[in-house]
Image (cartoon, one colour):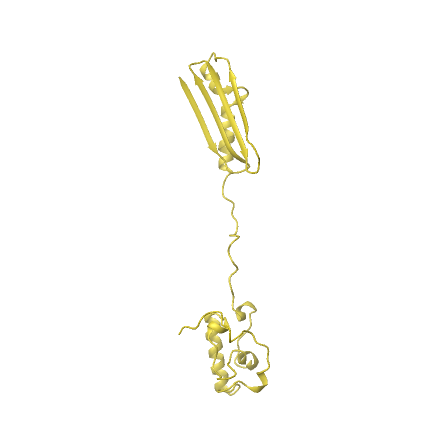
Length: 182
């Protein structure tokens, strides 16, 4: 009593292929092929029964027009071509960039109008990163440029200059995007 079972799973166009050959006591040969596609509604099943084979090797090589070597080769080719596709993660969000990095705005101590956007009009202090949404590098550059501008006499130290009070807001100081550290 001989029995052969070949099962392969292929995840490309053909979803599932099963080739089964049962030789029971030399009486009958049954070959079953199931093919189900990814979007197909049903499966195609073929079951055949033949008279007793005269030679066992011929029954293993061909069954009702199916060459087992060709089926095995097709299964191996399909499994080799079933490699993952290299693609970008569709759920990955775009990295958030700070305002100055995104538009490549140079921070200069002589650009008082830009620097005054990051100063509180009531206290004259520099807004923190939790309000300005700047990266660490740009926040540090901004603070250094503000100190340099104040030391050079371009900016007021205690209050924001009256000329820049009606400038449009780059961010909302009353609604920070991160909670304060303390």
